[in-house]
Image (cartoon, rainbow, N blue to C red; front, side, top):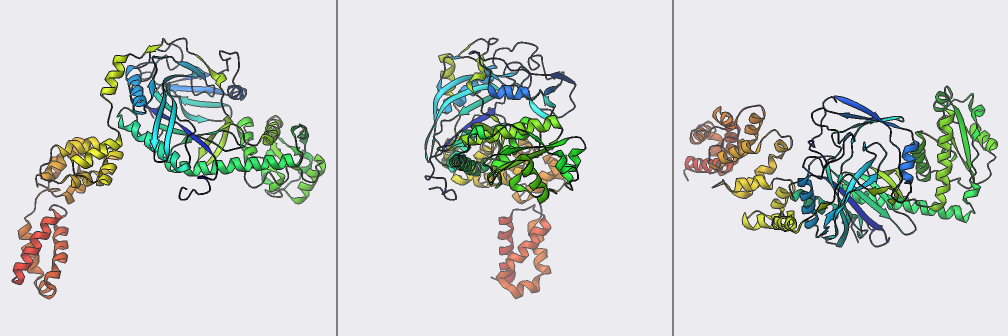
Length: 621
């Protein structure tokens, strides 16, 4: 059983898998444009609308059709010096970037996968505007891989190389604006089988894959460069794909809440079935209830009546099922996505929002509801309100199926509905790119140069550098292994555990890119040579941050030497009575005074030795 997750480990035969999408640190996949994101003002804009097409089997994907029916337009922003005609879909793609292919194949080999003989790109239909072409190019590069974890082996059926989508800048109900700077960045997609047995194993597996990816040194780092999609289902439920998982530590709780959501929807389905509710009883009549609310005190409805009407629908047998934050929220999210309406009212939450008991009674009468029935109201422009209530009725009918196969977006530790789960009908062949032959010579070279994994590097550090496993693990996982190894090769007297600790203590300077590795190396060498103490490092780094060189910081006294013996002699003379009273217990207070005046310019151990020696001499020992 998993501590903290006992309700879910072993008690529910859940199925968990994930997809990890990692950006590669190369030029773009199908052109020579740089893969850097920009925040300066765009130099041009292009306006487009996208339409769905049939797959190679003559089928139009349902998710793509729903996106098209929203009737949205898309604006694409770009730069003259970093965006080309390939990103604009005005020029055919070139062959896949060699560096990206080699990086992806290296990742596949580290995951024990079988590499394909030829890489064939396909088109995956995407008309949410995130690709100018209306599709994403993707190719399987390897299959039958695996990842071993403490809770068992996780199979990896496919590893794909694909192009990243545009970066969303802004959007409303009618138009979405994207930046083209991200479009075409090479992306590796790693898909697991549903072999994961617990929420904790899901987190640990995602962490392990992330470490393996970073070990290659060929992937991008930072927020948004790696994304985890978690797939969850339970017996009697259906697969939900949770997108946008950034923080690995939220994965266990996300899975828990998804399991709870699916269990709740299954219970609602069973209750509806027990009551004899079926789809035909959920009629399509939409009622105009504006007259009931013409004198309402509800500020929300009053503001909407200035431009719209109040419409409502009856839901047979749904009384008591819309409250509690599950089905009511599911319906509201469906309305938001499919109709662009952000608020509905349902009878389980009324009276509230200024809607009185008399209003509720009048609505029940107008709709002809009976005992056990519920209703939903929408206050909006009439056309939009009708579209919203059609979405309400559609989602209510789907409640009879229980859990739906759908894509959901992670919001902290909960999820929101995005769209139906895409089907295979959105895939068709890419005719503009020739097959890429993976030669045996290439694979032999890549196998001979596979990078160390984090675990292998930790073991080597602990053995070769006599650095504890925990400390070496922190150095490796925070990305400081190359810097540590470089410093280990130049220091002569400084213990390597001290070097590792100094690196970690100075990490804020590296993360903010205030200090370059060459400057830091000079500081460590100065400590190693005894020119400065390690206590002086923070002040020196602050000086370098302000624009000084390391040599200037040292020469100006920020890290310069101090006449330690003279300083100690003076302080002992000043504190003679105190020392006579305290005896050897005066060592620590006097040492504190020395360190305060030296301002970190001398090593603490050296200060302790000198102070102790001088006080013993003073006391006549």
